[in-house]
Image (cartoon, rainbow, N blue to C red; front, top):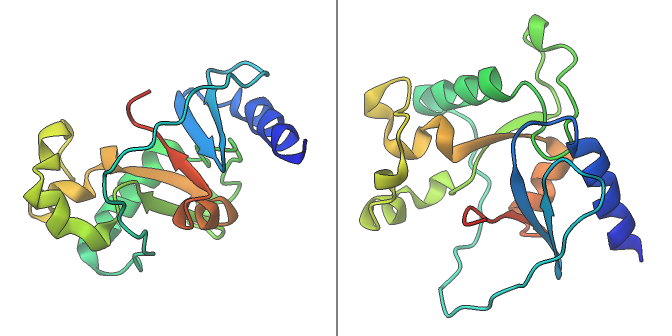
Length: 158
């Protein structure tokens, strides 16, 4: 099956990355723990209202601080393990620091007090907890497209 081969490829490339993530791709769930065979899990349907993911354009000092913190921490796509070859020259082309919880929904973030889960405040305290490095990952641009369209998701509970 095409998706299973894709997942095996992700597991193979992910073996290089130290972060443990759980991914849900389409109807397949794979927990990646640095081994080459994906484990399947269950998919739970809830009545929780989903928020439409919107691409936040990286502008302003709040987002610049977030972007720089995520880049410094990850230095590679956390899903594929693909390194940023020209990072030392400031060339981050084809890599995006991505908010896990979308920046466009900061009001929702604040109303539900999601800041209670943040233990590393943003570099600049007035940037808001949504811009903490804990709410970010570095993704290759093509992988970010999958993430933005919900073809790929991260389950923070696993």
